[in-house]
Length: 68
Image (cartoon, rainbow, N blue to C red):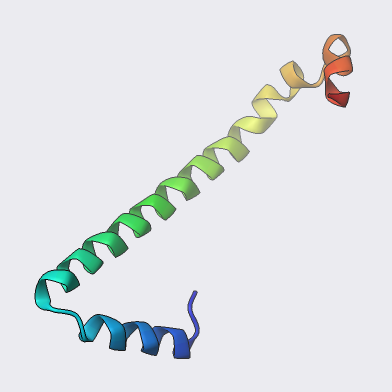
């Protein structure tokens, strides 16, 4: 999360842009927000699935690969 000074500076820069460019900035910010939300879901899914795969990943036959 940006601090107040960063947010204010960014708002001033955006406000100085022509209307068409402001729309581009808004689209880009929406893209970044969606990507962050997607990454959060992916991380959560990986964390939830980890215990299910523990038996497969942690076995004596594959122990030699743990050192690679």
